[in-house]
Picture 1 (cartoon, rainbow, N blue to C red):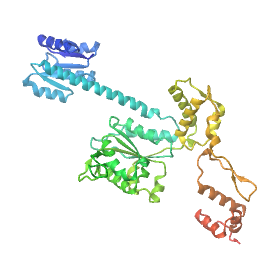
Picture 2: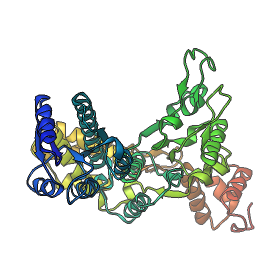
Picture 3: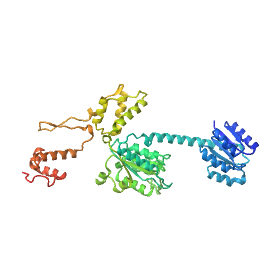
Picture 4: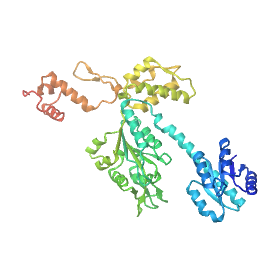
Length: 470
């Protein structure tokens, strides 16, 4: 039941308003002066206050200022005579939500109370939801304290404190890192820690967009512009207006679509497919890639101008194998989270499991660790043991080298092994074993002399080998 405070110096009107509001089901209280209202609010709570503009001693505007400063959650409605409408307008500019003309029509009073209290409930619900989402997706839920993660957190905090004008947009952000390192987690933290937290957060997996529908999804279309377009559709750039658009795996976009994203960034406008006019959007763009964008630029797979536009702020997230003690901190965190989720007592991680976890390279990074711990919590006994660590499935079987008597050991448990690195290492070893004799090194690797020379040039061995090559 909502509580309403009436501040009116005319006793008859004050009592009449109180009785009418009580008939509507509200708890209503009447006081005759601003000073009495201030004293009443020290010991009571109100959802809405009806304030007369003209009060003895403390005026209605002075009382409004006091209530707004001390009790910002109270909705204020001013009551004024016809001659004081301009005063009521000034009051609304000062924070009042509405005003009533005296003599007050009781039907109008009921409607004003209902409308403003409903708006207050909606506002409080939204604030609660935003607070909940900020708690769920804010910086505090990012676990880890290695130097690279702390650096990324500091940048998110700096972005959150930026004062950007109503018509301006925050700086674009590019987040890079291997799959599973937490790029989406940081993107959400940027949004929910920032000043746009009350706006929409739209997450788009660019790799999952059909190539034929990319532009329709991002920029929208008008009716009939594409096959089966029976109605116009808003694009995600427009849906995220005054919020954040997170383009995950942006490198998957076709080059033509990359060009249009660049135009949207530069102009702050989009043109839906088939539309004659542009639409202005104020969208904060955050993008992510799991590859080195500079390499993709060099290969012609990603536009250089878009790359530079995106990396105004660059967060490069480290793989889990390089985060030191964060590994065990995260493992223990996930164990608590999943034990709580499944209503189980908290399970400890055994010493053998800890050693196995440190040996394993976690190619799937934090995401793989999370899934692994979840499975272990569900399937293990009182303690999480080494059997849940996937090192035995890491592909450690040696490669049969054919003519050689031994075998080349291969251990993927510490993460992916680039093929070029292995090839370069074999060539280096062969050259060292033959005192840099190209012909003999080629024989050791079962290569022709010309192929060996090509490999030496490819890996920068020019001039380093023995001149006697036959």
